[in-house]
Length: 137
Length: 426
Image 1: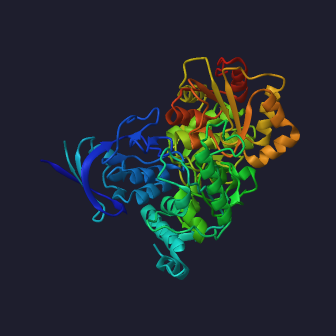
Image 2 (image 1 turned 60 degrees about the vertical axis):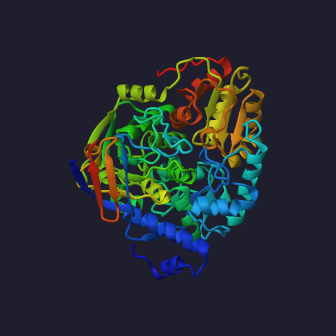
Image 3 (image 1 turned 45 degrees about the horizontal axis):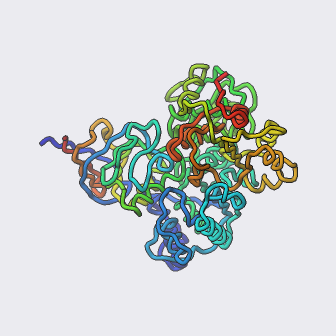
């Protein structure tokens, strides 16, 4: 099977494999996700109603309230957290959420992950070595 | 990240576990951001609360409050008592109104937890502002002051209107900053990141609070987390207008800093706003764009309205006064609950001015300290809501589950009296 490798920068270290959930829409933690259910809830979001639990979440970046980190932090405490984060635009909300998730996270890629990765692809995030390996669905 | 000797000492734990955990968190966070170092801050805004800021309740009970707070706010599995803040720290919005909590549907257990959290925050030495608008209550950073603030609507006001310097901090990073007086030197702390990225030419002159909200909501959705420069505004806005504008832009997008040429301190001219950079995109805000924002903010279809929320971000005293004037001698419809939110300190003045009484006599409630989205509170059985806040119109459908109309303060108060939504974009 064809494998694609992206190179990027470690945000939070670690290595994990899982299934991708990809969105072109930015994510707001506070008021945009339900931490207990592990789903996106924002009214006009393309993933509204979908679960990110145990997924490799691939998204452009975060927006909205400063409550974002606390919402993602809560997903870890209640067991609905995504397995890893892959995103393009660095913000304090994204960085702090990644730190509190204790999950591998990466940014600053050589190719746009939103164009290369599709929902359902197998993805191996090796943040320590700065690579993301994608096996297309 | 490069650390000073003082920072290394804190990180090694020789000053105690609380400072060690705070430094660990700031270092991990700074490295995640790609920051080279930390910067000193003497102005922190945060809100520590043992209850719920999200819909989760991670097992908080009174006898384990220190364990809950050190886990939630400083990411520590090892419990400890949070010590006194090292630097000037304000407690922002919290989970209940201390006087109207029963009307808000807060349970006695949650109320007790709220009182306990308040005591912990007082012990830590926080100023108990209990509002999302610290700049209305005496925390007015000076130009260039490095701050570490939570609350997107306050952050954007601090950066854009006052020229203070802060990123949008989370509860955890701001708690750490409060203990050690440091924050990552990254983002809006640096000169080069404060220049404009997108040019917005205003063709429709924003004048009202509602117009400024529509402008912010439209621009935020397009520029996302970048820095819009609003050009062509002829009439000076005021606190309420820019408060609403920023809150809207930080909801539809992640805007943390904007400039209004001629009116905000880092944009005396277009040249100053952009520096040597060229705008990456040019947008316009005309009648069509204003209509788009209005339509996007509207999620209701039923004109029968049973809940009206005013005061997000918390109302200024002027806005409370305007609401009281519209309600004077009138009565809120029996099917409708009208809740108006302002900081507690300003309500004290509203009490003296008789405004609170006018509002109460009309059957509405002037509330303080919190808001529906922060606390997940609303009257029982709401089917359709209305608000004059773009931020609440954005968040209420997702967070509280009811469709919402957006309009002016006047539209909302007329609806409160008749029970029927008749607002429209004029």
